[in-house]
Image (tube, rainbow, N blue to C red; front, top):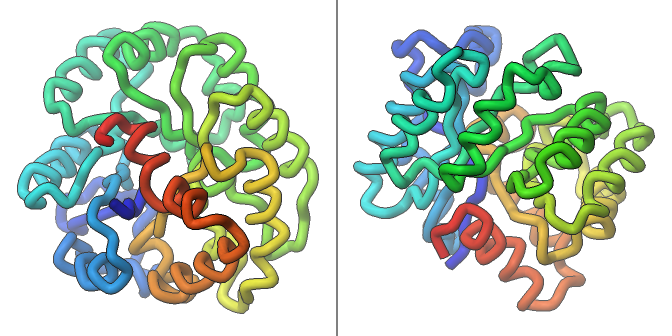
Length: 276
């Protein structure tokens, strides 16, 4: 089964998407699975991973409802919990009672303090994530990678996937220190990475060859056994849309064997999130 390992839904009236402004004209409306299904059908994608878009536990419950009503389309939900709350383990456990919850994603990219991830007040939450069999989606930017590596050293059994290749500065044509720091993350042999979100970092004028050096680096670092393809829909609408990113991905991965393509486009996500 082909899997879209990273997509979102939202309802603006819910009121907790602080980043979602009317100026984001491609995104400022409700998006549901009914909007997504035609793209999935076109590319033979039979399941998705639904990822949080608001830093609230209410949105996590909303996503779990969407998953329950999806007819099996949503295979896993990656939510949010207040990891600094005194009762964080209990909060996480309550959300995890719904077995569709397979991971949590603190919105690191929106937290000004790059050292936040190492705050020892988070230790009970990290332990709860491990004990409940959840995963961490690391919404990291390049400057978060050194501290993410320290977190991995502190919790070597914490399952982690780096979202969007850690958002390299593609539009600026820059590779360092992103490339070296991501390679250090990958060397542990455990951490996964999502092949997603790159076109948003490349900007409106991107071409396939704009993306190729960055995708090649992800392949070099993680290999086909630790990458998973995701659309980042509907955010991808800001940089060409689902179809353009999917067709670019086909070109960028064309040199791989069918078995390696299958890993990136399906089985890696199923194995990581535990719905294989």
